[in-house]
Image 1 (cartoon, rainbow, N blue to C red):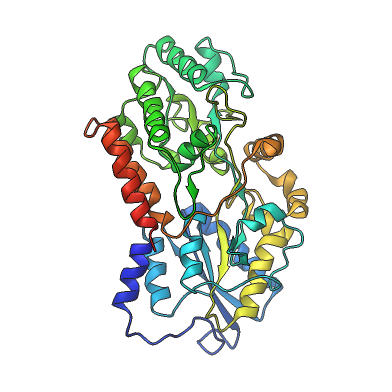
Image 2: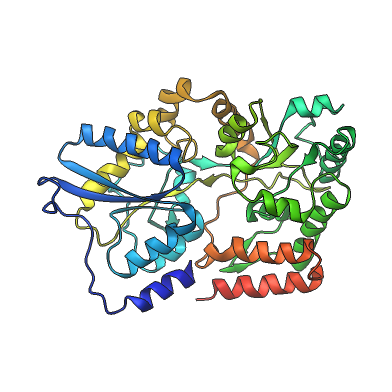
Amino acid sequence: MKRILAAAAATLLAVSATACGGGDDGSGGKTKVVFSYWGNDSRQKLTEAAIAEFEKKNPEIDVEGDFSDWDSYYEKLATKTAAGEAPDVMSIEIRGLAEFANRGILADTAGKVDTAGLDQEVLKAGQVDGTQFAIPTGVNAFPMIVNEKTLEEHGQKLPDDKTWTWDDYIATAQKVTEESGGEIWGTEYNENPAFLQIFAAQRGEQFYAGGKVALTEQTIKDWWALLQKIIDSKAGPGAAEMLETGTKVDQALLATNKSAFGSWWSNQLDALTKGSGQELSLLRMPKSPGATGSGMFLQPAMYYTISAKSEEAAAAQRFVDFLVNDPAAGAILLSDRGLPTNSAVVTAIKDKLSPADQKVLAFMDSIKSDLSPIVVPPKGAMEMEDILKRATDSVLFGKAKPDEAAKTFLTEANNALSP
């Protein structure tokens, strides 16, 4: 992200700053607010319905949805912000918060959006250096997800997720693969930094500290050894098959009934359940021996932010307030951007949530006492997932030794985080 923003800024340095918004632009005299967000067709439909509801309640405001798919979203947003044409309301994720805030792109929302009804601990995750630059849309966790029916069909019992270890997890998954004759994998695995963050936290290590990656080389190598053990034991597929599966939920082995276990963000349970046509459940992640905590954490699914240069800040604030506080918005968006952090909204929409989302709600409540604090990553963290994936793939495909890859990862990661 830092490189994308910097390149866009250099290209557009000579462009004079102009802000989005304004009422005299063909919108019939209404105040116009531009709202940028990413996602799939389903999210676009839900968002358009929420916008329509807002406009019904606020007929003097016209909200223009600026939708992009994930792959092009940040590049498009970086170009617009560098040109001084930032959308009035922007969706961003936690890895990009410090980057956008430190570039003066985001407005301070404190006292401008009603946050009294939001989870105050989650709300803090929208702050950078004490300033409330972002409002969380909802919260996620990164649990282990299991197809209980698949386990039972292959002679395995649901593990006790308060006590199970990584070895227990791999042994159970290995038996599923064996009992199925290789037709079903015991588990799929995920190279998401959240997985490594949980693994490291169980060892008392933070992913970030002091603006740098705080992981030790040994912990990184041990995490790769865990993934390699999954492959070597046939508990899960090899690196090539996992690469084909990709990171899209509809391609997940869980979604296609080719796996018993898998780790995904909690707000993806509904999509995984619909894809599999079977009931799936959420479990705490396995623990390392001697770990005192699960290492799991709540994380904002994404944020709503307001441009520091918006000419229609008041209307933008009203729109964000609607999205996070109005039960009508909650009833439309449901868990698409994570379960709402406003308890009154959750209460109002609870009966409308799908059975899968009801499970997520109950699971989130059950793990509250066993969660690590939310940490906003430093500027440059948007690049971390790609850097970690390159290093992980280099090890799993046998192109680099773990010692060499760990050093390369730390060097590249900390270079990305440098001012």
